[in-house]
Amino acid sequence: MKTYSPSAEEAKDAREWWVVDAADQTLGRLASEIAQILRGKHKPTFSPHVDTGDFVIVLNCEQVAVTGGKLDSMHYYRHSRYPGGLKSRSLREQLDRFPERVIYEAVKGMMPKTRLGRAQMKKLRVYAGSEHPHAAQQPQQLEL
Image 1 (cartoon, rainbow, N blue to C red):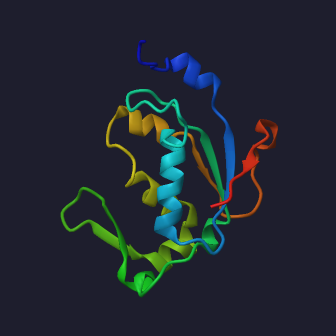
Image 2: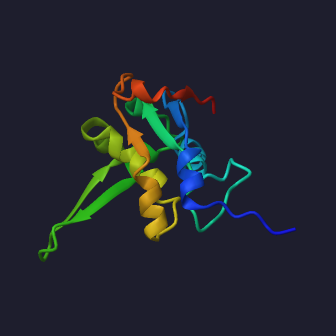
């Protein structure tokens, strides 16, 4: 008997949409669950070289919880590519200004650093509020 390997077309047809409420969820634990769903590891047809994952919509990302003193000790860095152009923001400042980026960066760090990983990240949608424009896709509620 041959080993089953899903094709890209089969995987594309079997994709589902999931909604995750990030309110009062721990950031790292939430990000690891989302990364598994984006990769498709929750499916029996998982294959590491094919994008078998599902779409994920994350709501209420500004209400995500962190433990310890991470709000002030954890920093996000960016560089302008000019000398002395390193800038940083604490997690608290990042949640105030761009709460979507906190979830996005946490999930991105758990994905493969390849073309496939970048393609799988395009299936992640993060919103600060409790509303999303993807009602036509009929997403299912995902309990974590």
